[in-house]
Length: 486
Image (cartoon, rainbow, N blue to C red; front, side, top):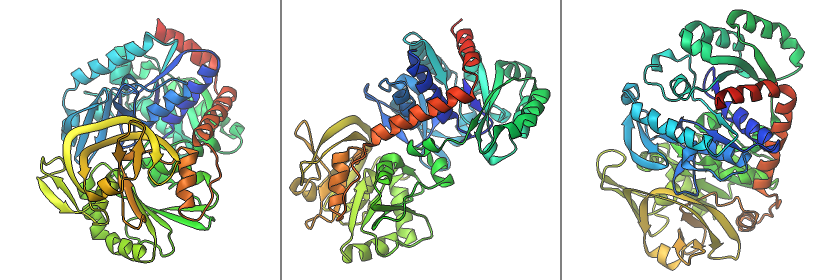
């Protein structure tokens, strides 16, 4: 189990790289995270949703993702409430204060899923969440040591030297952990090192002297990681994915509860595009050819935020200038006439006025649509593949007269305006297919690079695995895996 000295220290990437490394060596490998907190999720073949990181790790293992790989998922809807997903299905909401309440039933579910994966694999690589040194959360923990003890899994602690204080983080974790938790840690990894690792030789000795833990290696900064989808909004805040220099400019609204923002990573492959996230406090720049309203975990709240920011005024000017608008999932709902939250899924029951660019209305509902889809654009033979993940039904004249997508089963999704400049749909991952990306760019007067996004991700995983093979003590890691099997 890879645990960390904090959030965003690279646990997900280390697990993904090791998944690919050991898979390339002929082992049957499975990823696992007992509890994740992220609004970036993926739909599994067995009809559920899991954290995006575990879906990527499944790709690294060359196996379809399943709900057992991330049995407990928390999806923040506000600073105080998260949607609780258990084995892929929404079971309700949980308040932040309730995190400290006993969660033995969730730990039992997590261990059951872990054992299920153990039964089909030579090796299960487990990812922790946050840090085990957050001892205030230890009593009811199911994400780190709480799981590791019950499942009897050896732990490696990762520290991010890029953010500094790596020595202090590891020595501090050793100091505050109780003896059983401390003894479960078998060693440490230094991650994101820039420069000559020999310069950190004294640092390794200092850590070993203060903790007694051996080092498993120093992992360098991995440029290939930029070609992989980010796990959560923390990564988006740290380094907004962007591409500048292309003549065609696309702006993406950075909503407070933005979800599944990796939808737009494939656009970064095209040199003719300039991609920028529009941050709160900024007006929409003039000269954008396309504005994208992305998915959100709190549609009503984020639409209200959009109004407060004045982005609706900027959008109106953008459309008057002939610019295009594309809404994905919650963004599609916002483009309609109204959003009716009669069940009070996002606060008190109410109806909010939409942006009004599409003649459709949305009624939010507790039943969540989760399915993998494929088809073609209604105005083109260009194909797409992706997934639906939404709560709500959207209907109206524009969806009936001018649907945006046609699924392989003959059904339709989305809607377009009469001039075709405003459109929306529920499908995430819409532009992963090179054919879909080529068609979208053609509407903007540009040509796509034709690079296959999935192939780019796959090659990045191989590059990372190759680096880990030369910088980590793989023999020692395999010896730990045998300990876990026993």
